[in-house]
Image (cartoon, rainbow, N blue to C red; front, top):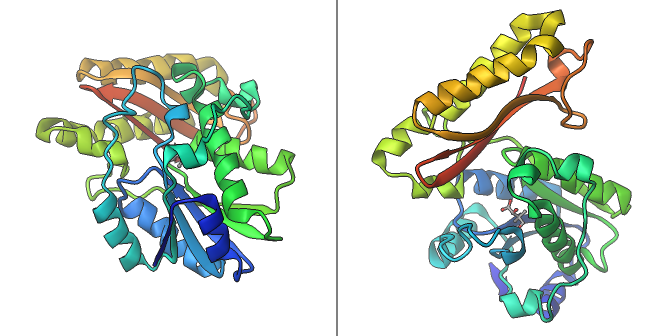
Length: 285
Ligand code: PAF
């Protein structure tokens, strides 16, 4: 496994390859990331994983400084998973000057849900992903990039960016990996104390309940949904959580379902804080 610290080093390592398969990460890798790496190996002729904690996608009060940096453990996991190249730029390599030129995704998609509670988040994500894509794929006629479906809205924003800029990159979504109790794997799960870790699965259970209540409402869904969502929020809050949103949306555009939208076209999404840890999850209904 090779390690590239700079964009020229990365491009040199990739020069002999026709189709890079790329997994962008912020490190602190778990089995969800490693499943993407294994999937990537089947899709390209060089598997590249980036490790970069992107300041641009954190709000000032968020956990940029404390975000776990676990370089040695990450490299050992990537080596075992068959990664070919780790791209781990320093901040000054990826942002050699202040990044005044930013990607601004469609507010209809990016200013709702996560974007409502983390303003600017998807601008930060899209900007760094565009920079990483440029580092990895420039000079290549084809490439694949893999993202976890746990960050459902992020995956949609990236798909739209790639489509609208006609980038020659196939975007592949990998299924959410879960702990045996059903908790979605996340780098932030490590923030949970023992009691919180036991409680954490309740977010996914609340989403499952919301999904089944919504399906039971059938034709009356648009009218009943606000009440069902409110009930889900209150149930989680009663357990000590501080939920941001628990909601049922259309998979196509993450807007509220209309009469006639069927179960297969919907997704439940949620974000809530347990103690100081903010968790997100989703299920396609
Ligand atoms: O999902 C993540 O880990 C990050 O948002 C990403 C895509 C690596 C961009 O920093």
